[in-house]
Length: 73
Image (cartoon, rainbow, N blue to C red; front, side, top):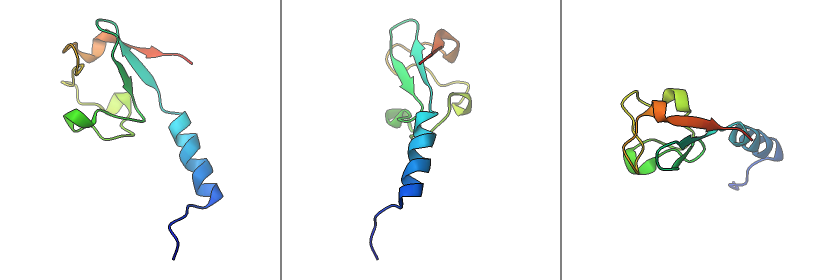
């Protein structure tokens, strides 16, 4: 059995990744990318902003979630 992904699965995966948002810390400029998560703080890739713990803080400056703004494409 091969480990290749079908073209349909590739399309679905890319579509989901494309829907991932980014949020910028207004204090230091760090960008939280939902597609990447925050692996240094045990936040897996694909974690939506609204699913981050309420006590999650910017890994660079320690700012709270309310100090972030969504980056519009």
